[in-house]
Image (cartoon, helix red, strand yellow):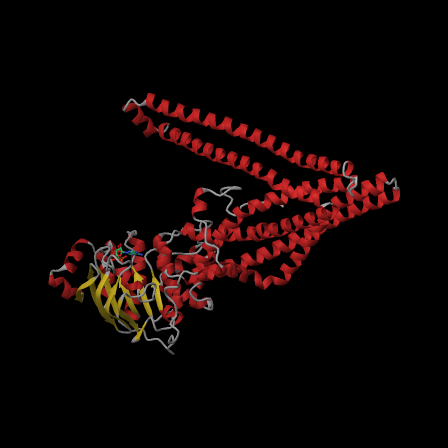
Length: 610
Ligand code: ATP
């Protein structure tokens, strides 16, 4: 059985970092790992039996060698000779066949356990709040999902079964040796570790030399990258550092050569140590066995000595593997600890235990003295207080970074308030059933996200049960139906990189149609700040304006026509509502709104002309 470290990084030995970060193996951790194996106890029992059988069987031919020599060859009995040879071959074949069954079962169990873990992890990640995804690196999350969980598969197929099969092989070999002759068996027990330890030491030296050579190689590449680029060369030439760079390069190369020579010699010595030690063991057994037989007339035959020598050589592999197990074990435990660490991360935003699911939603939204902070350092929203009655619309305006998006994120509970409350139909959103709340609040965000699939699939994501007519109706309202129909495959046009490339404006209109299909009681639009060409802008405007007047809506507005269509305007600055009222009232005030109006609100040319 080959031994591979689950992480694979440091090979057979632990790096300093791994040693430092070795996790504490507690009873709880082991029980927790065991809980994943428990559902498969029947298959595990079969694996255990298969391992016991195949390990025992694999030792048996060594034992039969004794009989072949003593009873077949020395006893000059051809029948027995053939019988033992056939038996030996049959046993070897059986051991191998059982081995196949064992690896099938092992892989089956490992695949199922990883499947369970992967699903559990994905479910858990889906429940995590937006805060988790903004604070964690996406690469790390994906590594947990893929390589760490894949590592578990390796632990089960390699580490666990290797510990078992190697221990059993060793035990069977030892029992067989003691049954033959206790003196030679004891000698074997002393010999094996004496000879495996120096080989390990030699291997470790070689491994650290390889690592050092790797680092040196990186250094050389770094020098080349830096100095052979255009800007690097400019710097070198202008500061006349050619000589200095050459010296640095030469020094690094000389170090590399020294390391390479040492590494290759260590490899040579390693082989010398290996082959000498592995041949000293059997020779010692022959010598002591011979002395016992000839000088002390011990009850031992030539065949027995051959069996002992053969068993001894069968012990090196398992002993070596078991000595390496510690490394795999620590890595495996570190991996489980990392995975469990993810499982244990608390779910920040979840359904209240006694969550309320009202019969119907009207869509009244209110902020009651809301304070909010993303992190402890800074209060982003301060005393935000407003009411949006069902059927009305509110436009939120303010300078970039004033907290507009943060405000609307609190409505579908992407984040929870720090102080105060947000209510939906007079119920605190934290007390409402999360599914009910999110079904009734539709958001068209600034950066529209469409999945890689057809336009139809993207639309139906909002409502898988929507009828074709409903889908088209939503697209007509969002002013995108005609565009879709013009495409070769209509609603079945691919959105992603394989098909059509949609412009920002088209994507936004599709996402408006998607929200319309969901038919929520409150609509939230985060109007894109990125400038669109005037035709797209007009198309979006034509889609949004009628919606504002017909639905309960909150808009983060950047365009004058959107602002004008709203019933009330809230002007936000530094997380506080500083002004509120209608366009006319606010313009006459000469405050923040007037300033924004004069500098920022854009009116598409054709709307201006109209
Ligand atoms: P814009 O008009 O540019 O979209 P905005 O008014 O919507 O801006 P917000 O996105 O609500 O502003 O951001 C308000 C403040 O909160 C900003 O200072 C921003 O840096 C900060 N902020 C936003 N998101 C986070 C986050 N996930 N973690 C920490 N701080 C954040």
